[in-house]
Image (cartoon, rainbow, N blue to C red; front, side, top):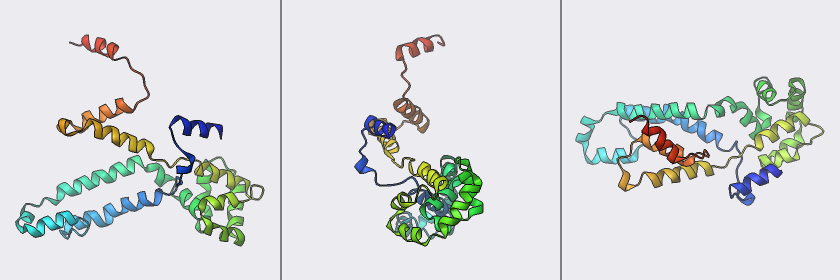
Length: 229
């Protein structure tokens, strides 16, 4: 608790604004990835543009634009975006079964869930038995209607010790997006109208410098660079 309070104080965060869990965003991430391959890309192939209303309105007003329409360039962007999602959020896919279990433990498969819970430090035999016992507990099943966080608070420590410990580890992961929002704000400050020719590569480097905790000495950097000229 002391470490959590220190973290919140250091980053100017307030407990009362903590309104989500780390599992809340996982389904949205997976759904968006699925939309790219099952909806967005086929829509561009077919020229229907039901998912791209702006593109549809432009082509309706100017039908001749379809003659010059290069769908491959748009699809390439979406495919690159899909790769970025797979790379940056691969942990979400690896723990898909675990997040689903935390959200609703009564529809999880014990066989597929057991290895994931074991990686969290749980004893396999104990945690498998506890999962089955929990899924057969009608009283606990009704408690889930009050919400995920309330449910796991209601799970008895003595009856489900291994399972409760695994759930606490997952629920203690911060779901805050303040670091992402702060980074985007930094990027917007850098790439303003006066610097519209700034490349993505340079913007990436500048953002890393601005967001890093490393304390560098600019005078020393200049001196080192002087040796190469």
